[in-house]
Length: 244
Image (cartoon, rainbow, N blue to C red):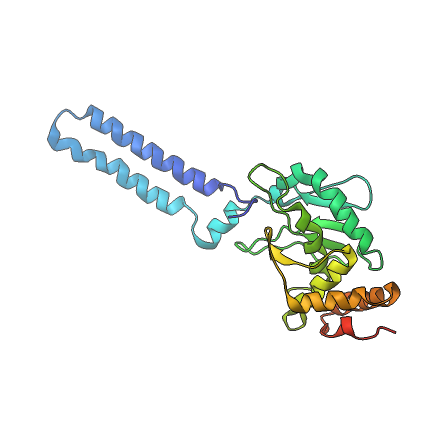
């Protein structure tokens, strides 16, 4: 289930047919006066079950019908830098904007000038069109309708930027990406999901190495990491190698 799921027309039609069949069976039972004719009520149930089975979407057809494309459309800020979330999450846009814009400010050495919510889904498989000037954000909503784990939004955004596309599995260095994100944010690196955080020795080592360098050299190494990740090149060792 995702925040973009809805009840498809096929499912609603199937439910309506079945409820009509049940109602007709009830009418038959109410009208029948002799016990031996009670089984006549099974006829509308059989017809209803058959019609429901024929109408109800299954498999890939069900997945397509339960996804609401309107909920996936973006709601964006009027000013720049542009920040967009899905319409399903439009209520948290004021919470997202300052954090997303701060992350974009930290990425001023890159071509990234916009931040959009990642509206990808697994079933059915959908994903936003990649854009060279846009960083994607993973937005999660808590039970109160607010942004879940707001302190993790910027680290997740920046880590994803330095990790590279998903199809670059052989070059995705999570430890280096997390260290680069932490250096930009000027905070101790942690790795985790939905607030669960834990220390990674390699990430801490890379972060300490960056903080020990002159800012210009550290920034050059972080930029080199970004450029390699965007081009699906190997990123291992870039934070410990001179960029000059």
